[in-house]
Image (cartoon, rainbow, N blue to C red; front, side, top):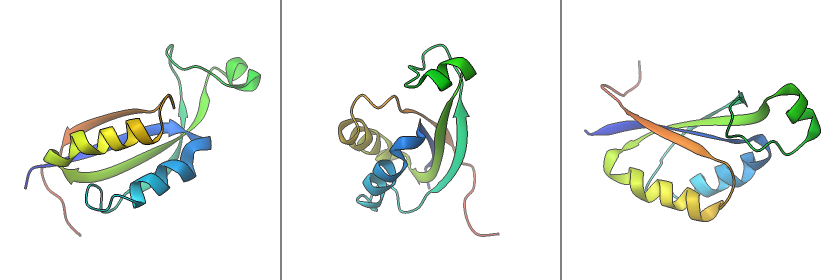
Length: 100
C-alpha cells in the first residue's frame, strides 16, 4: 500500500461544506477525522475584527489516510468545490495503517 495522511485545514465556517464534499467522494477518501484548530500565520486573511485582534482564526483540521494516487484528484475536488476558501493542505507518507 502506498498511503499518505492528507491534512486539510479550513476556516471553521466551512466545516459542513467541506465534510459534505468529502462524503460525496468515498472513492477518494473513505473516512476522515475532524478536530477544532486555530490558524496563525502571515498569509491568513482574517474575516472578522475579532480574528484580526486575536491574530488567529477558528479553523478545522481534517485528516484522512488515502491512496497516494488519489491525492491529486482529491485536492482538485476541494479546490474546485470550495474555490477561494483559504484552505491549506499537506500530505505525509504513512508507514503503517490499521486497527490497533
